[in-house]
Image (cartoon, rainbow, N blue to C red):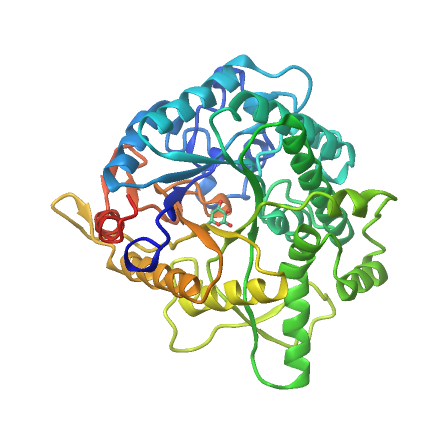
Length: 449
Ligand code: GAL
């Protein structure tokens, strides 16, 4: 054990994703992704924002790494853009694309920052979308090939991997709600896509084992502890469904190799999906993860739904709570509840918080520093919950704050700021926020640098 209750090798890092920060969408031979196409469609993104320039991290990564170093961050969770490696999604890998990530990884390691790479943070090559995207089963094989290429290229130095980021969002926000690329609204397709994502995940884990690289591989799931709005049987049932839809549908295949029976029955009856072929569950079952990545932002309080659309959850916003700029309730206890529940229900897996953080207004600047006391309180509360979980014997190994710098917040464009560093989108200048100064102290005081 290290100082103040965190294990000595506990990693505090920050997290980002390629499309949200890189920009330079036409450089290095990069192909288009579904987010390039989607963000350029009128009306899809707030203020018509796109990731064309984003934070220009593609060129400014040395400066961003220097900031991490200055804070004393030990880890950095980043994603590789599939269309930089395979501009058409498959075929021959691009040397320029691989070179960019080679340089980035080397620069991180030179600064004693350990990279954790996510292979898919939503930027599917558009060329594959034109073949049916994640609705096409072949995409799972293209993903495994891409993953294998990246393990080969970077796996001598990168020891921590995530296959996918938030498959619920790719499947349901992308194919049912339509708020994310590719912007479809088809529940049956979304369910089918979720199965293909689980297959792709398992194939990538298998490719990792076959690559012979050492290290650990996991997946980052967006999970929400669910609380019924009242003790009534209907609310309890609604909360259980919400848990199945968001959490168990992904936790069970990843950690137990099966889909939850109740959800499978509902999806089959309502949507006649998913189509699971022979051998699929075997493949998923024989490829367990080394650790589970958890993206935790808030809890959900669920009331029984009046709607006939079963996927339309009836969420309640508790009064008197604090909410972030996203309208998300600040609820650190939820992190502890969530970790405790997974520890108990899934036989004590190793876990990492792959994302936690908050968007606030960030309007007050004093002496060049953004005064974001609300973000400090948010991070402090959640880091304390993590410390508590460790004290309770939960195997939590790291905590990656979303995000290092303000960035392209998907459908909200640049209107929501999550960074511990501020970005001026006119000049692309980075500015310290008070939360980054606070974090530097927290890391020092807890011996985590
Ligand atoms: C997650 C996502 C990130 C980031 C964050 C804040 O769902 O993985 O890319 O946008 O939410 O909304």
